[in-house]
Length: 279
Image (cartoon, rainbow, N blue to C red):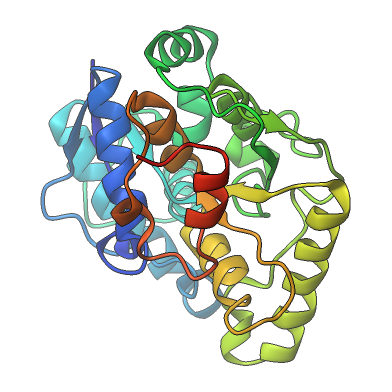
């Protein structure tokens, strides 16, 4: 199986650990990711609030490149997925013209939903060599992956399940909670840090009250917000894992490696050692 891969800007920098775990997981599953040649920024998160036409044109350039490859697209970032789907919809309905040929012939997949299909889950379970038994997690989707449902295709947008199913397939104990899609503040922290701090603190407090030892995400900006807001705090820190980091961990018979988590602010190493999941 081959898919075109749109990494987005964050995976080149602050979410490089996410990128490395994605490559490891898809390689283990025997799926070839072909990075879109000469891909460019999709405009998330600012373009749509500044220039509507540009918010369509920027993702469309990458859609045209994927169509030229003849491969469906998989996007790991919730914002990137959202903007690609939005641009595809705008072009299909002739609301905006773009300078690249986009027919809408390729499917744009959110990575969690692609891997949470029944056949892929079975493949994941067969690949698990070290189940994450005893690791209690809550899954946080943020607001960009599932909304608006007309574009994203999520029918369970009030209580999404893709991350839950993937974390459970890795052997973790997934706890239910009511804040899966509550906004974390995203980039509002640049202009109103006080609002972001309030939103993130609420999410982390609710995760602790639920009994979680860690949070599982798929969005680089959500991970950054939840993780970095814990820098310097004295209270019990909650590691914030990308879901592919947990899958990679479960796929490793000898346990994970400390260097895999070097970019985390809320250090997950003590927790993983306690669970005997690190080599």
